[in-house]
Amino acid sequence: MEQELFIKHLLQVISDQSALILKLEAKISNLEEEVHQLKHPKNSNTGSVPPSKEDNRKNRSLRGKSGKKSGGQPGHEGSTLKFSIAPDEIIKHIPNFCGSCQKDISSLNEELLSKRQVVDLPIVKPIYTQHECYQRKCSCGHVNRSNFPSQVNAPIQYGANVESLIAYLSVRQYMPYDRISEYLKDAYNMPISQGSIKNLLDSFTEKSGLAYQHIKENIAKAVVVGADETGVKVDGEKFWIHTWQNPYNTFIAVSESRGIKAVKDNFPDGFPSSILVSDAWAAQLATPALSHQLCMAHLLRDLNHLIEIYPNHDWPVNMKQLLQDSLKARKTLETEGFQSNSKQLEQIEVGLDELLKIEVDKKYKKITSFRKRLIKNRNYLFKYLYHSLVPSDNNGSERAIRNVKIKQKVSGQFRSESGARSFAIIRSVIDTIIKRNKNIFDCLAITANLVPE
Image 1 (cartoon, helix red, strand yellow):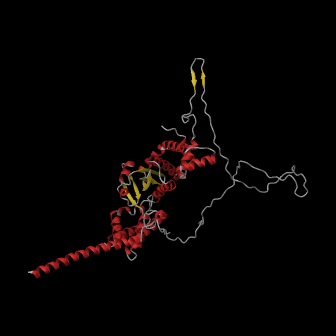
Image 2 (cartoon, helix red, strand yellow; image 1 turned 135 degrees about the vertical axis):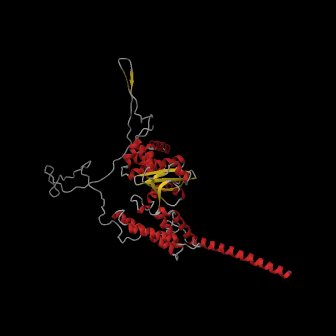
């Protein structure tokens, strides 16, 4: 009886130890995976990590070598300083005395040998325009009084050109208030306080409201829209800057949310007529749209990371090659037409499906996760091969929000939510002006001369 109990006890010990061994093996496997990940962290070439956060930056671009020499390529049109055909001032240097015999030759006809021009800027100083209102009394007894222009509404104020310049310096050139104040004082002999700068920016933001709304409406009905978001500090708190853009419009908005709430607040109906280009962020893919296109650049960076951490696995290498083949096919389509190479597109589609069918060992967790993501979004990978207006990447949106990061890097953070919204509104207007190849100063001056409703 005692022997049976002892055997049963030993069997239980063996069972417990076997369970513990399995548990420890799983834990060791997880720890080995974590160590492997730490040895191969993501960077700007293998993920969405910005270069500024990399400890050891690796200069590896997704672009392959073109075989071309660096510098301007054949056919590239250079630019240089050009002569003005109508100079503002001409200074003639004519000899009046002979350099040999000292004879007066001022009465002789001169002959032009050569000419040179100097391009300079005039000394700028403020222009004070005084508006005066008068009255006249008619013989009938009625007193007729004139009125000030609607935009002249204070005893003394800054004009539209000052307002548009401050908007340009703050939002386009990322200058903080103190440097704007210093610049206007030193370069224009116009002292201005930081409080006045804020008030002028607030005024310009209000006047930009109509253009901002038009940009939003244009984006809402666009055929293709790119979307992205980035974090930003507002008075010490985490906010999010969102952008929706296309080749002709850029709309930037501020939100406390990174998720779908921000989309619904700005575009409650989504984009029913648009193909939405984005990374694989859930809120972007959950946005109602005619269809979606995943950013190839993001996918290729992720594959670079998988190749780096699993150098002996073929799946990420083959998938990367397939995506690169699709990008080459796109270039061919742009040259020969989007109906010209259906056989090559069919091969790419079949190749993708074959790769997605391959089962990957679960120990390669990152590959497994990436494969599942592609399977889930299978229909959003190659829209750009069938629609000429759909880009293969979301670089346009990344450029739109990069301005926010530069502004934050210069100023540290936005002091208030209203300041962040002001930047978003004015930057939307400026970026849209740039995309339409218009003169920024001219367009900002038009806005500054508007009278707020």
